Image (cartoon, rainbow, N blue to C red; front, side, top):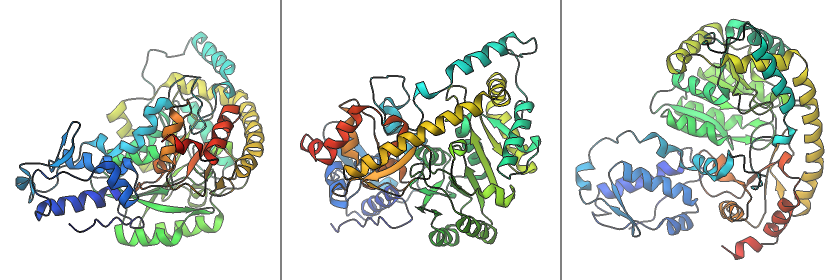
Length: 476
């Protein structure tokens, strides 16, 4: 049987490439009923893809009825596969689209277990957060006669908070009215509402590559075909962006402009203008995910400021900066889209939490939030000033010099796949984030995401030094 063709540079996701070739070989009887598929480990090694990619491909084949999984024996071509050969593909069970993204969330990533060190996580340490100020705001809320603790909130969300957000957005040169802002349960509900509104099964959606894995998962759940736009230190690669726009005519492009996750880089003005020119030419809607906005200390352009919410939908959140538990985010859009998204919010989740929104409003208007973020930015700069040179001294190469915020992307030159490193780290009580999670098309990658706020513990640096010396690999 001829080798598979797995093209890491092709815009089609690696999982789809593998699945389509297996289906073709089963259909033309190159692989007959009862044949055993290549083992996951061997396929991954032979074609230089991650084991997670192969697992997802094989799981899809099982879900589609082409392959059977036999416990302890492996995967085999289904005995009655001939009946499937000329049948259109069924819609894949949604959670099977998100195998790689779920990996990190399952590794105690969202637990409060302080025994697990989390240099790869995506949030601030608990002792960096303003717990006393939040407790005060909650107490004050319960003492007010009009707290409305048992009522539904307004459809758009608590109006005084929306008015305050208009003031804050104006500081970023984004002009809005309260009717253009929809409050949500964090940024993920905002992204989900937008995906439900714009994306039908099979539609193309562009995302940053590398980018945030939960964005990928959310879009896959809504049936999107993802295509990655390579990230450069100055923002998305506009040449590749135009190629993808011309070929796939995507419904959306979801991107971080400022303090990009996972690289920590920010968009420059020239790239921003070119992206908006392409959006106009190809009738593209851009979703600007700016949840790290308040960590910014240096320069950074925002597409929404240049576009004034014409082709750009802007997303913000207080989950990363203030409280992941309160879950307050927002969408800013043109009035028609804002009303439609508010209606969709009503249909899928009724209202958001007015109690949480009132707490956030109090933190903003009483000055506690501003003071908290000044402390955080100072601590992050100190942490980065110490950690980045230390990483480089151990032999790690930075993807780019971050412009601020929590994250940097780094690798060791001698390592081709960071997944074994992350798996070994879990066994020693460290949660690291392998680069494959941030690649929409999968495939082995040497990169790791590091969170500067979680790099202070000596045990983290002991582990990184051992990785640099090659010691963990000996135990794998």
